[in-house]
Image (cartoon, rainbow, N blue to C red; front, side):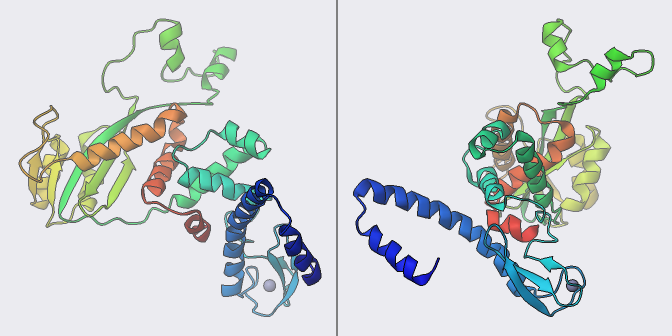
Length: 329
Ligand SMILES: [Zn+2]
């Protein structure tokens, strides 16, 4: 906007009535939220003035993008670029809407469903789904966590899901050539009255949860429920001077024996959950509660995406900000 026009605009502001002021304020607040992101992108090109294609440092300003971000052209390879050109979110056409989705994923008390977000933003539900998967791949930075002091460990379980799988349909269409899936559909257990497997069957996917008292935590999906698997996952996590608290599964005992650390076994029954003083597994129990509250609205995400959902929960627990995700991309 030209300077004079802007002055005139400010003068008109004086004539607004209270309701209009309220309206204008909301609009400006929304605009500021969008600008935060844009300045984030902008900052990236300002810091790294190298061309993402050839590494050339000489560049010209080359107009602005639809979202008003400065575009540059490399003087060597003549390609144009902005701050997010080679990032994971480089090819998103509506970064403003993407940011709304990101805000919802990280900051909303309860993330909205893909369909609701799609209706609200006026885009296709598959677009939102793709963006969500993109965010999950960005936050999936398997950084090394270090535990110390009193370390609590326990597992929680998630029922295996093949949501969206065509296995059963393909088998029904061509039973001679397509092998049947390894289990009936979960809905068949209710509609066809099949007998449900009791307790922890092999369709309950274990998720190992480890936490220490300084707030370091880890959710890790294990491939199976075997004791050896749990042991293998636990060994590199526990330092030699730690104290382990667990429910006394044999794998934890073995880990404690092998690394020569003190091990407190906590009962699972009420009243036996504390093995004296500060030796308890209340922190991991609370993480399990957070996990089940988080995962419930998704009605069992497909197992192939479960890892992403776990990382998403970790990002929420770590109070990750949308700008942090942008920086990682
Ligand atoms: Zn270049």
